[in-house]
Image (cartoon, rainbow, N blue to C red; front, top):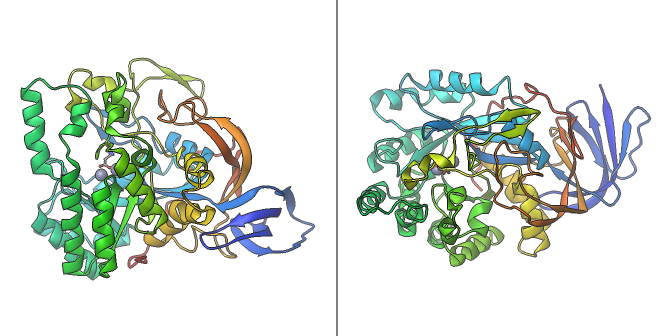
Amino acid sequence: MSKILIKSGTLITASETFTADILIEGEKINMIGESISDDDAAMIDAKGKLIIPGGIDPHTHFDLPMFNTVTSDDHYTGHKAAAFGGTTTALDFVPYELSGFRKSVDLWHDRADSKACIDFSFHMNVTHFDHGVAKKLPQLIDMGITSLKVFTAYNERLRLQDGEIYQVLRIAKEHGFLTMVHAENGDIIEVLVNEALSAGNNSPIWHALTRPAWGAVESTLRACSWAAQTGAPVYIVHMNTAGEVDQLQYMRERGVPVMGETCPAYLFFTEDHLRRPDGAKWICSPPMRSVKDNQRLWDGLSQGIIQTLATDHCSFFFEGTKPILYENKQIAIPGKELGANDFTKIPNGLPGVGDRLPIMWTYGVRAGRLTPNQFVALTCTNPAKIFGLYPIKGTLAPGSDADIVIWDPEKKIKYGVAKAHHRTDYNLFENWELVGYPEKVFLRGNLIVDGDQWLGKPGMGKFIHRSPHALVI
Ligand code: URP
Ligand code: ZN
Ligand code: ZN
C-alpha cells in the first residue's frame, strides 16, 4: 500500500491546533504524531503550512435541470472546482420524480457516478406527499440517503403544505432521517410576484422585493416548532436573515433539535447587488438581504447558533450565449440572460463550491471573525457530524479517510473567474484579494490538486452510503 508522510505541518481540527506529522497509508490516515519516520513513505515537507481536513459542502446542485436550462456545473466540473478550493466531499440534492424514490435516485447516480471526482452523497427532495410517498420514504435508508429536503415555498412546484411536512417529520423521527427545510412563505411570494409582473416591474431587484425576509423568519419559526412537536431534528438551509438566526437561537436554547446553515453570499452581499446592471448574477432563492442581516449571520456563526457553512452551489452562466473555454472546449449553456426581460425567468442560483474555503479563510479567519478551529468546524467537521459522515470524514485522526488539504497561509491571490474552476463565466468575488490558499489536496490519500495542477479523474469519487440517526449538535 502506498505511504505518504506529511512532515511538520500545523494541524487544525475543530477543537485543536498543533504541530505534528501525518502518515497516510493507502486511503486512510494511519498515524498522527511527533517525529514519525517511515523509510517506505514518500515525504512532503509541510513546515510553515497548515493542514486541515478536506472540506465538506453539504449543499450543492450539480447538473440540475431548471428554468428551461441546466446548472452549468455537472458532477465532474463542480467536483473539480470544489477540489481546487479544498473541498473533498459534496452532498447534492436528488429531485423527486413521480416515478418514485428508487427511480429518482437511480437517475441521479446515472448523472453523478461516472463523473464524480470527489466523494459525494445525496439528500432527497420530498416535493410530493401522499400515502404512497409516506410508505416508501423509509426505502431511502437502504439507498444510503438519510436526509430529506422540504420546501415551504415554490408553490405548485416543490412546496409541501404544513400538515404534509409535519407528517414527513413524524416519519423522519421514526426512521432517523434529518429533515432540511427551505424556509420562505410561498403564498406571499406568489401574491407579490403576480403584482410585480402586472405592474411591469421586471428587473432583478424585484426578485428580492417579492420574497420578504419576514417570510423566511416566520417559516423558520414554523419549521422549528414542528421539530419541537415531533421530536424530529430540523436543519434550516441557506439561512439569510437576522430573524432566522434569532428563531434558531430561541429554539436551541429551549432544547429543540434544530440546526442551521448559511452560505458565503449571505454574509457579504445585500439586495443592493441586485440593483446593479449585472444584478442577475446575484439572483438566488432566498435572496440577498441587508447589511444588518449579514452581521447577524456572522454572529450566528461565531456564537455557534449556526452549525455549517455550505454554498448552495447552483451555477449558471451570466451570458449563456457567449462560450467560455473549459478544458480546451468552447462551452455555452443558457443562463441568467433567459430572464433579461422578466426576473421570474432568471435561473436562481450562484456559483460558490470552490470559493467557500479560500473566501472564508481570508474574510472570516484572517479578518478576525472566526477562529481557525471554527473555520474547520463550520466547513468540515460539523457537516460531517450532522450528515452522518463523521469520523470517517470531517477530521484529522487515525482511521479517518486521508482527505487532507495542505494550506499555504501566506499565499496571496487576486481571486475571480480566472482563478476559480467553476464552469461559468463569472465569479461573485471578482478581484477580491486573498491571503491563504490550498496548495495540495488529497482525496483518500490520492493527490488530486497540486498547486495549479489537476490530477483528479472522473469516476474516482465514491458515493457515501450514510446511516440514519446522525448526530444533532
Ligand atoms: O437559488 C437557489 N439557491 N437555487 C437552488 C435551489 C434551492 O432552493 O436551494
Ligand atoms: Zn432551498
Ligand atoms: Zn439549494
